[in-house]
Image (cartoon, rainbow, N blue to C red; front, side, top):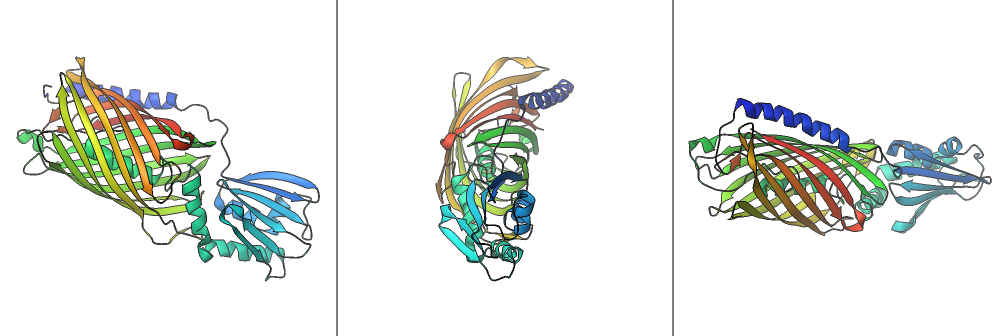
Length: 430
C-alpha cells in the first residue's frame, strides 16, 4: 500500500466523516424499551399490597429498610402493623419483615443464606437505622458478598461481569492497543515493518463509541471516548504507548462513569510479529448504584500479520491478569469492597483489504474481525463473549504506525446468558 502524506482534502474528509459518525450514532440509538428497575419495593400490610421503585441506592435504603419508608410506600401501614417488604436490590431478592406489632424487624437474603433480627431499639425506625448501619459499614462482609453476587449473577454491574463493565473495557483496550483488532481499532497499526525517519513521528488517537447492550431485561447504554498517544523510540520499530479510555454508561436509568490509564511498549520480534506488554489501572463509580472499585491489570498481547494476495491477515492473542485493588472504597456513606481476581484470554483474527479507490487522495480499506474473550478465576456472569466487527476508512501508514487515518465501523457482541448488543465505532489518528 502506497504511503501518502496528509492533504487538505484528507482534512476535509476527516470533518465529513466525523459528522457522519455522529449522525450514525444518533440514528443508532433506538427508543428505549422497557427495562428492569435497579431497585423495586413491594410492601404488604393490612391486606394492601403496593409496589414502587427507587432510582438510587440511598432512596432504596431510606424507603425499604425503615418503618417511615413503609408508611411512604403503603398508606395502610402503621407503626404496629404486621408487614412484609419484598425488595429487589439490583436483581437480588431480599426482605424486611415486621413479624409482630412490636419494634423488631427481620432482614433476610435467601440467596446468600443470611437472616438477622434487629430488635435492640425501642422503635422500628431505630432498628431500621441499626440495619442501615450494619450494611453501610459492611459488617460480617455482607455488603461485599452482595456486590460479588451482582458480578456473578447479574449482567449489569459497572465493575465486572459483562463486556460493558470497567473490567470488560480494560480487557478490550489492552487487546486493541496490542493487536489493532476489536471495536474502533481498525486504524491502530502494530506491525514492526521498517521505515524512515518520518516513522518516528508521534501518533495521537481519539475516538467515540456508542453502544447499547441487553441481558436478562437489563439495558446498558454506553459512550466510550478512547484517547491514545504513541511515541516511537530511536529505533522506530519500538514505541511507548499510552491509552486512556473514558466511559459513561446508563444501566436501567442509573448512571456510572469509568476511566483507565494504560502504559505499554510495542516490541517487534520479527518483521511480522509484534508483542506488546501493558500495565493498566482503572476506576469506576456510581452513586446511583452504590458501586465503586479500582482495578489493576497486566497483559501481554501478540500480533502476527501476513499477506494473502492484496489482503492482510492479522492473528491477535492476549493473556491478561486483572484484579480489584483490595482496598475498601466509600460511596455515599457505604463501604464498598469488591474482591475479584481473574485471568483472561482474548483471541481473534482480522482481515484487511483495499476498497480499490481513493477518497480525497487517500487510500481506503475495509477490515473485518472476530474476537473471542474468556474469563477465568472468580465467577463473573458473562465469562465468554465474542465480538464481530467491521470497519471502513482511510489508511496511511508509516513504520507500522497509522497516522492521518479515520475509520467508522460497527461491532456486534454476543455472549453467554443471552448477552447481546451493538456498538458504533469512530476512530481518528493523526
